[in-house]
Length: 355
Image (tube, rainbow, N blue to C red; front, side, top):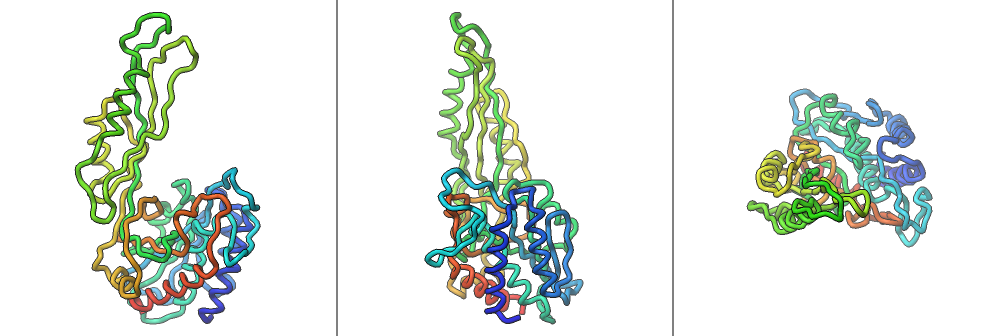
């Protein structure tokens, strides 16, 4: 199939996906539509739960494998929507709808790109594509669950909105639960161990604390207290204050190192990471994918937002049509010409590296 027809059909697929509710962990209906694409294009695919995946027709053992990945789940629409989030329609060149930008545009562009190369022989890389589930919720049945099933991946392109510029690094994430303990008491009596007052010092410490090591691509580690909870009634001093701390980790630290530093230094009774598996990720600037992208005029940057890159242990590049600032916004949209451009850039990039 020619590139122009592939692009037309990819945009039509995106409209179908937008019209189909696919909240994270509820992706069954959109998985069916993605299966239909592979069936219509005579691509031998497999389905594992709500993940749809395939390898190129002339897959050869011994060659390095390039993963093309994006997700077909969405967040729930927020209350500020003025348009029907499931009514895929174009106004002034903008295709509106939930998941259009994050990450439907990237997904259908990568599917079209994989289809373009599916029947090519003598590629330098094997290709595997995974249209994955549960990205938005970092759920157990998403890309992470596919890594033991698909062929071993040597490098990956993860489709997320980057304006088709090269996100050569991505911050990891560790969420911590912290507790500040004090002495519970009646509010009418003296209490020199009030957990709420003790939290003032702790909050100031978190506000001021800086991790020493910065990153050329990702800058500093970003630590933010995002939740605080204490007390149940006006006349009782609570016995503890609960905090939630969001830490965006650069590639100068492992998640375990971040946890060790906070466990040793934070002025709280205890602090516990929820998970250490969402690591920072990067790709060497000298990798052929990066060099080819730069030669095509694409810029490089470090991304502060999390994607399925976090579950990969291989070098990975985040690249896709759309703008990250539109993700999870009301009246989400992607420009139709961004998809058209995205497919052209994906195909040209792979021609330079794998053809």
